[in-house]
Image (tube, rainbow, N blue to C red; front, side, top):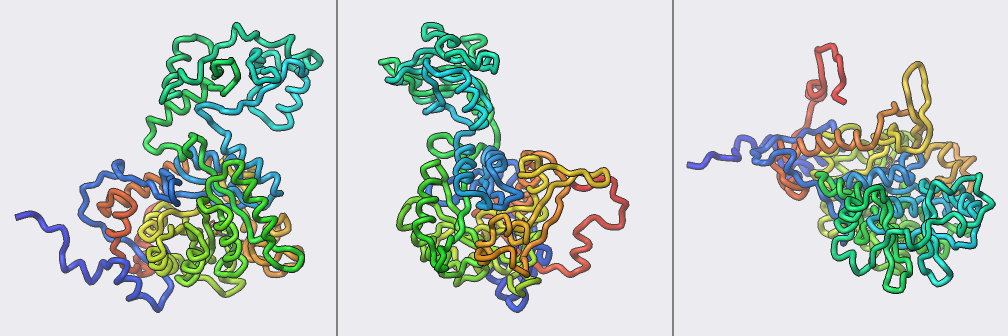
Length: 520
Ligand code: XMP
């Protein structure tokens, strides 16, 4: 007889979501209020699949997104997130122009084939090249040189791009066409990276390969460092999140911007989002503290009409009605969370908000009916919280967990021999003064806002995003192994919940020992 894998003795104690949450509907529950029962498993943690689908054709490889906060996500964080298979949402506490540049930085980060490389004309001066490098903050200094018809004239190598040659013409310093290594576009074949990899192995010391057409017009540039990185990435368990052109995936947040009459400024929102789309932004997040609102709904509608295929995240809400409203307006993914964030004071200041697991359950049922993705936003302090959130949501958004990373904006400060980075709520006075007041409905005069809904804080510096994500992913995979869940869908169906008493919660953390090393 086959061994049994379930028992009716378990059933009244360890309940599936649709029994557990309705049975506890009189009380708001959050991560530490519950624990998950382990289930029969044939799944090893390392064999679990973590790919969530954000929206049509936008696949991530891990279900983790960095928050659109000015102390968490600019281009550096977004690049690190995408390289690890996740997503960064570039915050909007900066000028629109700057946000466009941040998105461009992510989208241009690593290319297999740089299709439109920066190039110069033979008549320009080395000084012009140096100026552009300085102005655009390029991290490279070798450039193809083309004539007015786009034909390749030569290559300007980094070792001649020096201030001492500033007054010289590019034509005097370039490596002439005959000595430049090129490949015809049609010879690249189906796998340009493999072809270029072979080329670099065969040509010792050559690090750049220019791509030309039959008329010798420049069509692109492949660098050895990009090829090596991409070849390496292909072997990794979690591949970078890329678009169909092999660019890293990037999200950006916008607010429901109002005009002087307090109405939605459609033209401005549309103009800015069009520019973001032009730069290659893959997903836009209409991000405000209270999104079950006309302003956010109208913004989502305007964007959906103008960009039928653009994935739109909207939020935050904590109720089924809010999810249904935003889904009907055209959002693909809804952010859930009001007040769970580590820097949030919304519940204290405004007396509103719902503990996160209850909010997620209620919203998840509406999301399933409307076929939209659910993102659990805020309150994550450990990988176990992510596992719990992922039993109901498709991905999590984290701020505090990444704010101490090298890739987060801001400098490391030393206090009493320890190292920290600043982390502030977007509803804190400082962040609102810097521009985020619209998120909290106070854009008219942020300086006069007397009740901020977030605090300014410090997070201990915690090294690279790669390291933090490795820990989080390890924890998620471990949780999935315990539940016998091969993928995120199975995590939803296999989850069985039980409430935890205060004593049970104490039992869950290390106790009655002198800790020598933390779990991290
Ligand atoms: P964690 O817990 O990851 O939370 O640090 C990040 C999320 O918190 C939200 N957020 C705020 N909520 N006041 C709030 O009530 C604020 O000032 C504030 N700033 C950010 C936001 O959803 C973020 O992703």
